[in-house]
Amino acid sequence: MRLFLFVCLSQALLCTLVCCHHGGPHDDDDDDHNHHASEAKAFLQVVPANIKFSYKFYSHLAAAYPHDNLFFSPLSISIAFSLLSIGAKSNTLSQIREGFGFNTSLVSEEDIHKGFQQLLHIINQPKGDLQLDIANALFIDNKQKLLDKFLDDAKNLYHSEVISTDFQKIKEAVEQINSFVEKKTNGKIKELLDSLDPLTVLVIVNTIFFKGSWENSFNVNHTKEEDFHVDENTVVKVPMMNRQGKYQVAFIQEIGCTVVHVPYKGNTSAIFILPDAGKLHDVEKALQNVSEAWTKQMTSRDILLSIPKFSISAELDLLKELQPLGITDVFSDRADLSGIRGESNLIVSKAVHKAVLNVDEEGTEATAATGIGITKLSLPPRIKFNRPFILTIVDKDISTALFTGRITNPNK
Image (cartoon, rainbow, N blue to C red; front, side, top):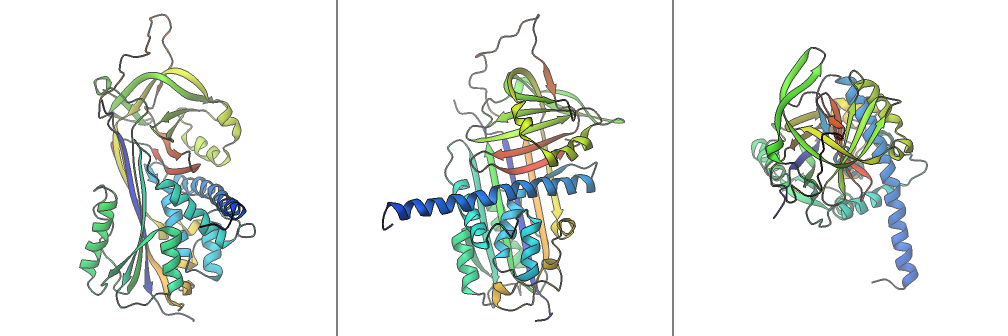
């Protein structure tokens, strides 16, 4: 009996560039070994930078929006801006690299792009029960001539499609881009764009679609309506999914939170972090200094796990949210994107990030009665996510967060 995938996340990111006017087969085994060693080195340069950006960007958003739901894909944002950086030069390039967690004195541009190339290759491999797909596309004004190097690198390093677009017909161009995004996100995001600047010459789009089955699914008959404590004064009713089983759990007493590792089929997991009452913002600050000690505290325990069933959507204006990270020039008349078409008269005028998260328990528990033993004398501890919590979807193949967020109110 087939287990239904019950978590589906999809999101898309775009950067829109508009005109502005301002200044200016191997020869031998050694070759094969060296090639793979080079790929591995490049990949290992990208992973820590992606992790660093994920923590830094989450920290910024958490402080800026202390009471809101948050949900985004740090990986998707990183990929889109790294693709853009093919055409960036001087301070514009340096800001993008440093803002996204790279130490430019230790890693070369070539290694960064090769690292993303390898990352995309790993992600887009078939994964059986897990669906994880990333797509990149360049929508190019049909009257513009972009540099061959920019186009070739976008295709070869970032597996990007190149799509001719008539930006003189704004409505049709918006519909064309939205249709691409809707298809790539399996209908989860229908309207990424509502408008475009009439001077648009290029739109860069990145989509990531994830659909995974819990390794041990929840029984729909065990879902009950319960209280969720948004804050000290606000309580809302939510459908709470319940399951008893063995999970990797850690009680991090020094900062006041509980961590539960909930695996999907395949090599991907959801990490749920439940701060103690009143400790949400303290835990969020501590996330910037996650240490190996956290991982060492994870032990396999039999627990009663309760997670809300919910759907949320989120949208970020990256022009606004990336500037506090030092990424400013690319959005101003100081932008140097001359590597795109050979002229320094392009800026990013729009950068939108949209995300959708659905968590539910659809499907049937294939082994509902197996391995569960409950007695009145020794009930396992119950971990109930009935107050604001943090969620990260991690791909262990690439040691990277695919999505991350904070649920303060599952009903919003």
